[in-house]
Image (tube, one colour):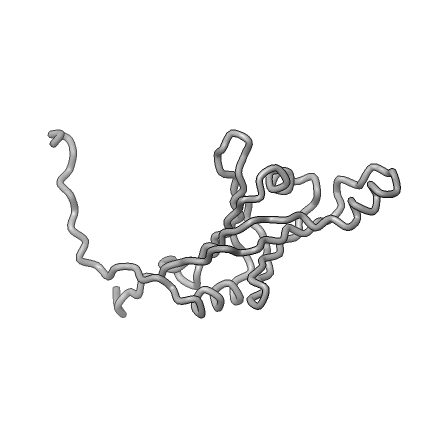
Length: 143
């Protein structure tokens, strides 16, 4: 062992627990803001704070954006995405992973009419969630 390296620490604390599907759905339904991750052309993540809507029955997330935003361009190139949502305390979170589709009726209408679409038009980023996970740390009272 390197003389400068510290000895391993022992964690006697409460271990995190996986959230149930019902808890994950509740967290996604009760929160409104999350951090959307897309993939840059370099392979690095790009993170954006977004306002979202969770549709539990369809297992989809919807995010409104303008068409010219970097996240939209990146998701058109590579639809793999994740949304991280913080829980009501610093110890819990949910992550929804899936593939994004850009819903752009105004852009499609402009293109079919032979016009250049407005870059400031609103589009919907619709994410079909394929994986949902998260954890919580149930801290004892007084910790």
